[in-house]
Structures are given as C-alpha cells and as structure tokens.
Length: 602
Ligand code: AMP
Image (cartoon, rainbow, N blue to C red; front, side, top):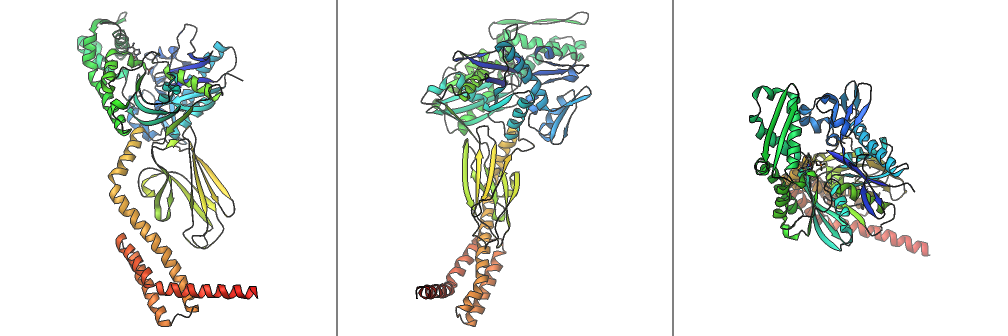
C-alpha cells in the first residue's frame, strides 16, 4: 500500500507530513526545512519556481510572483474584486474560473496551488523513496463546497488522489492526540501570516464536532509587519520612502525583527542595498507590543464571538491549541491565556501542527487508527423549493456532517408528469431569497394531485459535498446531482446570509404563512370543484349545489387576497359549512362500496 501523506496547503506556507513508526512527522528538504513558502513565480522560459526560490523573486519579479493563492481558491471575480487593486498582475474570469495572468500565460488558482502540491509530492517521494499518490489535504473550517472542490481539483492536477479534505482545527486537535479523550471542548486559535481563525470543537467519545468558527481572512502576522513598518517609516529619509524595492526590503527586515523579538528584548532592522540605501534601526519588544496591540485585540473579539455562537463561555473550554507562526509571539500567548482563562497548549511547532494532524487523519483512513470519526457542521441550511416557492429545509444550519436526510414530497397538480427539485442554500423562508445550488426534473407517473410520492435524499459527505437524489417511490425511478457550485461564498457572505435570515425573519414568516394558506386553499378548491359532480350523483338538491358553488367562489376570492389569517378563517368556515355535503358524498361512496362488496360475495 502506498504511503498516505497529510498536507497543510497554507496561505503563507505549506507542509507535508506522514506517519513514521506511529507518530506524525513533517518531511524536510535537503536543508532540513519543513516549510515550503506558498509562493509561485513564473520565469521567462516557462519555468515555474515554487517555495523559497519563488519567494526570493518577490522584489525582482513581483508582477509574476503569486502569494496567498489560497485566497482565490473556488472564488469568483465578484468575490475577490476588493482585493484586485493590491495585485500586480491581471485577474479575469473565464468559464466560471478565475484566471491569473503571469507574463503571457494564464493560470487558474487550482493550477497554481497544484505547483505547490507537486513540490510537496516531490519532496515526500524523495524522502520516502517511493511514489506518493493518496493524500489528505486540510482547509479552513469555513471553506464552502466550491473552495473544497477547488482544493481537491488542485490535488488531482498535481497527481494526488485526495482521499479526504479535513478541517484545519480538527487536524490540530488530532495532532495533539485529543482523540483519546472521552469528552471536552477545545478551542483552536490559528493566527498565521495573513489569516486568523478561531474554531471551537467538541469531542464526545472520540467524535470531533466543530461547534463554531470565526475569524478574519485579512488579519495576521503581515498586519503586524505593516504596523511595525508604519512606526519605523518616519525614521527613514524621505527620498527613500518612494522606492518600491526598498520598501519591500524594509518589510522583510521588519518581519525578521518581529520574529527575533519573540525571544529577545531588542532587535535590529537592517536594510542594506549597496549604492542605494542603508537603514539600521533598533526596535524593542515593548515598542513592537505597542504597535501590534490593536491587531491582536481583534483576535480577542473574534474568540468571544465564536464562544457566543457555540453557546459557551470561556470557562467551558478545556484546552486551547495554538496554530500558526504568529502564536510564537509572547503577547499573543498572554492574550489567549487571558481570553480563555487557561494556558494554551504549544508543545507542537505551531507551523507544523496542522500537517501533523493531516498525517494522523491519513493514518486513520489507511485503517491503522480505528477509534475516531470526524464530524463537522454545515455553515448554512440546505433544502428544496416547496409548493408556492417556499424553502423546505432538510439539513438545518450547523448540522453535523456527514449527514443523510430523507423526506417524502408529493405533487401539487393533477396529472403532473414531472417534479422539479430545486436545491437551495440559505436562511430565508422563500426560495427566491436563497442561493440556488442546483435544479433538476424527475419524471413521475401522471396521477391526481397528492398521490405521487417523491422521496428526496440529501447526503453530505465528510468533505462537505452535497449529493441530492430524488426518487419516485411508485416507479423506483430516480435522479441525482452532486452539487458543485461554480462560485463559492466567502465567509462574510455566509454571515451576511445568516444575518439576513434573522433581519427578515418576521416578514419572511408572514410571506411563508400566506403561501402555505394559499396552497392549502388551492388543494381544497381543487377537491371541491371535483366534488360538485360527485354531490350531484349522490342526489344533493340543485339548490344546495348552487350554494356550494357560491361557497367555492367565496373561498377562491379570499384565497386571492394577501391576508393569510383571512384565508385560514375562510378555509375553516368552508369546511364547517360544507360538512353536510362531504358527509352525503361519503355516504354515497360507502353505500356503493358496500353494494359492490355484497355483489361480489353473492
Ligand atoms: P503561518 O501562516 O502559520 O505559516 O505563519 C506565518 C506568520 O508567522 C508570518 O507572519 C511570520 O512572520 C510569523 N512568525 C513566524 N515565526 C514567528 C516568530 N518566531 N515570532 C513572531 N512571528 C512569527
């Protein structure tokens, strides 16, 4: 069996790990470094550079060197519009996929990520001395279907078979071996170079459950570097401040000083560009802490929001795990300890912990560790459009996945030859207000309304990918779709959709009640119109039939109004006033049935 590797495909750095003699280890390069900078640079002769080599070209070839490609995975041009002005290269959309233009070539984010994955694969193969194919790749817990699919696609392009996409916080918990605990609440505080994520997990009997996530996709060590740079710039001669190369070099020097200050009280910021400039400044840890405080405080706000969403307080958290290079900063550790009221765990290298956990997950999949099951949650409700355009939720928001839900539906009109299954995502009561994920038709046998039975099944796999199947229970005929939305939702959009659901809750409910009352009235009216003939056959006098037709007209009139209360009232009255007729029709039907029975018995 080929080795299964675990990969952390990060925004700033990526790593590959595997299980060696029962313990996960990250695979180093020839120089012993486990981190591969997530940077790709395209050369003149079509040669692509990845990792450290590419990072070195940040200054000299900035228009064809890509950083943070993870931010573009599974997103549309609309999603990333706000970030485009920061990029020194062109980005456009073609066939629903982003295209990043580097020199005279275009690459999708998947292709660019595949360069990084190929480099990791190559590194693993060299180290292990055999071909590597199957892999587990981690993604942030808030990644949606499209972003997870894009990550899978990148793996495929790189020649990997992606067995599982695992949430980064879950991987961190696995790396810390928390699977053996019976139960407990774990907070995973992940503060990297460009992003901040906080996830609250519950472990019950070896089962991992993501209770909530929060964070900021634009908050990280880079902001600290920037804050330090802003502080130092006034000390740099004005003439040098317009030099882009110098500023870039200063930024790197600030980052180095920041890292040094995690273990020293003082550090130097040195930029030496022969013939151009010489900068040599001293920064103290206290000064750094002064400028970085606002950045770090923002992570506290997100932690408190995540706790609130999980319905927990800080004292409910049993363990806090640190992930990401920026958690090496002493001030960050103190803030975490203060926020959660306990010392965070930091025995494992915060850069490696996610990749190590991915290797543990790979081992579970290889069948070597059996006592764990990994569960996550859906960020938004999933459902289908029902009669009158309402949203019928099958899988509520925050449901644990993998999940499987079945529900039976019927037809609204007589002799319908097909039903439309319209798959929706969102928190609004009306289908039109939610996000449409897929739509397909299932042919059904023509029958009177309400008799056809169509079963709809939603299956969400452990990677968060949704498979919808509809089956006509009479004929057994079925149809299914796998939902791969062409464009992903950003974390902000998900939050926006949840918020909208709450804001429009009242008016949405009013609308839903109206739609439901009208649908019920339609069913009753349909049956009543058919019953006129049956009533006549049952011997109901013409005069009563005329009144019955008037009663039908009255119900139809109220049904067209917009007051759901009035429609419900009219329905109640109609049912009470036509009870006599219903009884007569029923009597006649029973009589004819009994006659039939006695005949057949004779
Ligand atoms: P990650 O995205 O997890 O790879 O984290 C990268 C970020 O961690 C960058 O902003 C680094 O500058 C930062 N970082 C790495 N080591 C240290 C350190 N010793 N002290 C402070 N920040 C660090």
